[in-house]
Image (cartoon, rainbow, N blue to C red):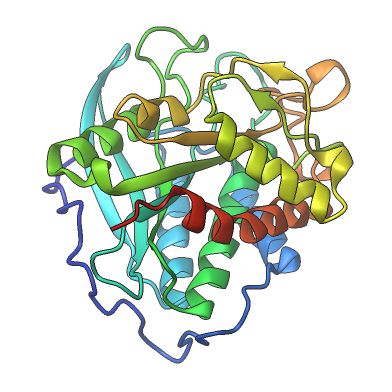
Length: 312
């Protein structure tokens, strides 16, 4: 990308709140599913959002504006990468929420925000409401809820990843996960990877018939914690889905030694007929599913902070 890479690690303890939307310290975080749904509608209104497109840049601006409105200071992480169609420019977006203790470790919450390059495969537009509009909408609302609550036991990074989808139709080799591979490599190079205690990935969480799967690659302890929270909240039917090895952005963070989990439902629509097709639309998604995932994550984060932080 044309501008220099923004330094990955912001100074710890940096004040990041601004404007009238100041945090309410001590207030339990609440997930607003209606606001998350509006975030999803906004993304879908931009149309198809493959990497390098004007629609994805509009999405990126929307992400940054929304994070600012939550009192956070978003950062563009520019980079270029070779692809089967030549070198392309990408840009992740992230915003940090500093902990009470400047020396605290980190948790990263992530979602990709690009859609499949589908122009040559389908005559109709591929809107990607579930993949990945739903997880991006949930992550935006999680960032808002946590920022409103104020500083926590650990530092948080809300990470929106570009280039998860392959440039060609088939996922093969390194034609995928461009944004997560770049960000994870920068974490390792800066030394920050050793201080990240967990990476929590959200992907395809808007299905009306939501059941989060047991990804075989995910950290078992993390996955069990999130699913236990789901059962505690009365969402038993939405967790403990079938086991499968899932290739996704979390593998990039696992590769640099960060415990990672993928909260995902790959079974989208009857016989998985909506995934990577023009049927991935708003009418095949559910606001209730966004709320389920948002509440599960907010309920589990204090447990992750306690169980995954290193004792000093």
